[in-house]
Length: 262
Image (cartoon, rainbow, N blue to C red; front, side):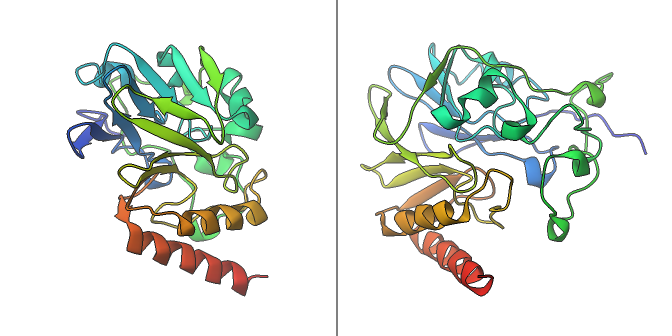
C-alpha cells in the first residue's frame, strides 16, 4: 500500500522554560529519536538531530538562538540526520568519523540500506523487536522519494569527551563518556539540577548491547556508574523521561538480564 503524506513532520513538547523535546511522530518507534533543545544565554544546544528526513533547523527556527551547537550522543542514523544543518557539531573522537563520512560501521546504514525495509540495517538478529518494514508510517511531503534517503556529512566538527564541559553562559553540562551501546556514546550531566541527557546509554526500553561495536563489559560499567550518581531526572535518547527510582529499576533489570545470560 502507498505510504500517506504527513500533515506535519515534527512535534515538540516544552519540558520547562529552557528545554524542549522534539520528535518525529511518523518515524517508527525503533528509530524515533528524542531530540533535545536546550536554550542558553550564549548558545543553544541541540542534542541529537533525528533521521534527517526533514529539516530540523527549519522546523525549530522560531526557538533557536543565534548560535546553535549540535551534540551527537552517538552517530547511529536516527541521531545525526540533521547535524549537517548546523555549523558547530560536537562528538566523541571514537565516533567523529561517522559524522565526517557516514558509513555502515558507524551509523548502521550502509549503501545497501533500503529505508523501505529496516531488515537491511546493519543489525544483529533482533527478532523479538520485529525490526522490518519501512522506517516511516508517512512521508514528509508530496513527491518525497524514500529510496533517496541518505545521511549527509557534517561540518564544523569538534571532539569532546570525559572531563570536558559545555558552557551555555547561564548553565553548563559536564561531558560523560558512557560506552557500551556504542564506543563513543556520550551523556551530558548538569550536577546543579541532577539532570542527565543520556543518549542511548539508558532509556526506558530494551537496551541494545549486541551491535558489532557494542561492548557488554563496558556497558555494565557505564550502568553501574550511572546508578551511583545523584541523578534526579533522565532525558534519554528514546522513550519517556524518568526519575531516579525508575533509573535504578531499569539498571537493576538489565543487570539481572545479563547475569541470567552469562
